[in-house]
Length: 158
Image 1 (cartoon, rainbow, N blue to C red):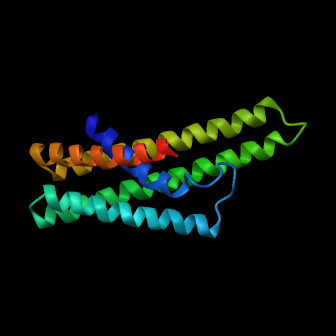
Image 2: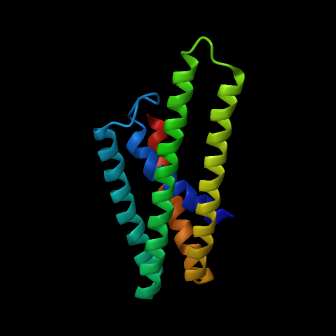
């Protein structure tokens, strides 16, 4: 489970570093999308370096990089969906006549979408693990934890 947490934290760290300077309620603007893409690209390059450092077989390293890319893409998509559900809640909140059922419908959709995304990331995590030896997995997840901790500390200082 430690490996999943590190990978999920990495994906979330990469995605959130692009958005942490923006106000939570704002829509996805073109500039924000560019920020997220730049952060994702930086994160993928750093993770690619970590994989190259820990996985010596070039074929397995390439497959591992592809899976990490898929994980980050899913985390990015999940983040975008989460923002959209929040936008819907903010919009509904402005409607004086909104019913509790309307709020619950959005919350249910948000939770179900989050669970599907989490399940997909979990499946990708196991595919990634299958590409690596126990020692490579340990080394990679240790390095990813350091990477994610660095972003967490940067975020907490803001």
